Each structure stands twice: as structure tokens, then as C-alpha cells.
Length: 466
Image (tube, rainbow, N blue to C red; front, side, top):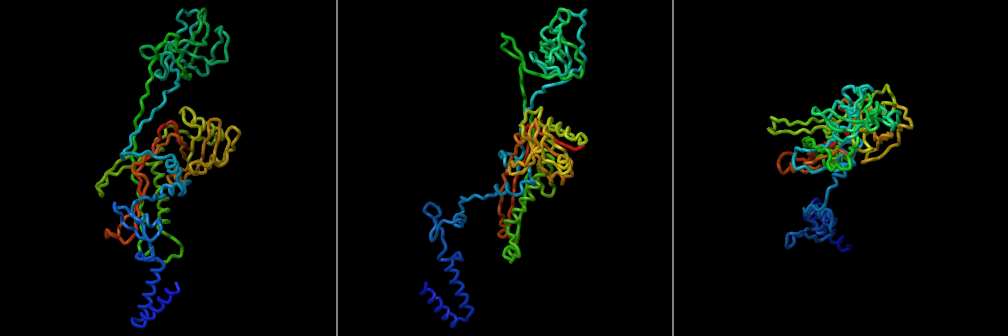
């Protein structure tokens, strides 16, 4: 090293005397870059050599990230997906939830999917049924014909629970604490139900007569009852219902000029900072489209291409509820009842709403029946928890509702039945605008083509303040 310094100093003096001071200074800078490895042509820098079969081999240095990137083999993966998850997940809960749950790959921009609904379990009696008097009773008195608002709910051998009508004890005279249960014997040609009572009334000498049932009484379908010799039962078929949604192409482009990149800055603002801000803005836009977008296809006359728009899950929810705050805590209990019953969904759901709706919920005095629990972290989001006998509700303020003029509205989502379809996964692509002669900038385009669907509409509910 000492001999090297003497050589450089001697050479610098010689060059300076023959070619001037500035030429000698340039020579000294060249020597410095060679020794410190800051030049690509440095003798000290690593180099890639092509092998016999076209592979790359590193010489003059260890295997580094730069060496792998320069080889162009694509071995190193970007962390863009994890970056998406980390960027302000509280602001875009729907998009965050769909990413954590995972997306299904779609081979088309148009997604067809099927929902299998459950058969109705109840209806109401359409016409009054009046029990026969003792003088009118006959051997057929145990058989009654009922006409309901939806006779197709019931089939032969079904049992029916009659709401708010009490059955009888074994003697057919004494009232029991059990509700009245009916058994479907057959159906008439026009679909009405021929039934007899399981725990009915004794009229005259005839047992199991059906007592008086007023119109409007709720009839609930229960399990089927077969005899010992029965080998068949009325058929049950369920047909899935087809639905459709469009994948929308979401894009965001980031650019910075070469001069801006190399300029001295008071604060460190790089391309990565711009990328993070762009991803956040893109996710906010996607959140609004996933919630309130309208499924359409229009023709762009300027670009001479079709544009697909995705349908929002707000319109896909199968139930509605109006929150009447004059009823205070009772309205929350009723909301929980409707959200968690009648849909066979999970017992943990998410309520995402605007500031006015969340504010009204916070004003209530919760009791032991409905309690406002501590903060719970799920899917990278901090939720407030409302617990009831019906289930747990994870509550979160979404300013997207406020931005869309729906401060008093919210959406209860069953996370088990929300599905994301992705035709183009979230990714970035560098544009070489310099070589193309467009602009002297570094450019990056972020793209995703996707949509959200609610697989079981009745497990989700729209909520609005009255």
C-alpha cells in the first residue's frame, strides 16, 4: 500500500508537469474510483461470466444482490404484496380483508359464480282454521286442511311447529307447556296441506284434532317423520343461483425525472416513497369500487375499447336493517338478532360503517346482554368488539362511507363468505420511457384486475340509521 501511494504521487507530479494541474487531478480521481470500486469497469468489482450452457458465473467477488439482479434470472422476489398489507390497512378494511383471505385466480375478466341458498323454514297461515264443534265431529275430524302463504315450504311427512299456539297433554284435554306440532299427511291438488296434530285436542271421541289457528300465525318447518316401512321420502333438490361480476382493471403510474432524482433535497423523498403513496391512493379508490361500484360495460369512444366496471358488495348483501336509535339498546339487540339468525352464517361478523353510524353506536349504554368489549386485532386491523348472545360483531369506522356521502350507513359482512377473484394479481412494471423517446423519467405502473363477491348474500346485511 505504501509503494502504491509513492507510485500515485510520482505519477501525479509527472502528469501535472507535462499536461497541467486539472489533467493530473482527473487522473487522480480515476485512480481513486478504481481503488474504491465505484466504477463499473473497476478492477476491484465483481464480473459476470457466461458459462458453457449459458449460465452466469461470478468472478472477482462474492455473490451479491447486485450480481443476481444483473444476471437477469429473476431469482429474487419483490415484497410488493406484503407492502400492500402493511400500508394503512385501517383505511381500506374491505381490500385488506380480501387480501388476507386470499384471492382465487380467474381466467377471464368476467366472473360467473353460484350461490346455494337455503330453503325457507317458515311461512304464515293464510286463512283462519276453525276447529269443528263436538256436534260436527266425525271420523275425519283429526284431519285438517290448511292454506298458507307459501305451501311449497312444506312437503309430505314434514312436521310443523305452530307458533304461539299451545298443544295438549296425552288426554287431549289438558293444556301442555309444549307448542302445537302438526304432521303433514298429504297435499291437495292445489297444494294445500292435509295435516293432523301430534299433540292435538280431543273433540268428542276423536283424538289428535287440530285446534283453532288464526290467520297470520307463523308455521315453522321442522324435521320429517317416517314410518317403519318407509324406504323413500319426498325429494329434495337445491339448485344454485348463478351470479356474475366484472373484474375491473385498476392502474396507477408513478414517474420522476432524472434531474429530480439526482437533485439535492432537503428531505429524503425517493421513488419508493412515491410508490407507497400511490399504492395507498390506489387502495382507497379500489375500496370505494369494491363497496359501491356498479357492474357495467361501456365503450370508450376515444380509446375505441370496452371498459369493464366491477359491481360493489353493498348491492350484493341479501338483508337490510334500519337502526332506530330512539329504541336505544333494544335496536342493537334487534340488529344483532337479524344479522346472526336465519342465514346459517358464522358467529363472528364485521360491521364497517360511516362516522355517524359508529358515533350513534358509541353513545349507547351497553349492558350485560350486549357488551362493548375491548379492541380486537384481526387481519391486521384493530376492531372494537360488540358481544351478544347472538354472536360477536367487530366494528370499525370506515371513512370511505363518509367520502361517499353515507355517514349513517354500514355493512355487516360475514368474512367466511366474501371472495376475491383476480385476473391480474397486484404487480408493478417498470416502463422504459427514455429508450422509447417519450420522456426522460423513471416510470413505474401498478396494475391489478380483480373483483369482490359475496358468496352467500343472506349472511351479509346493510345497516342504515332511521
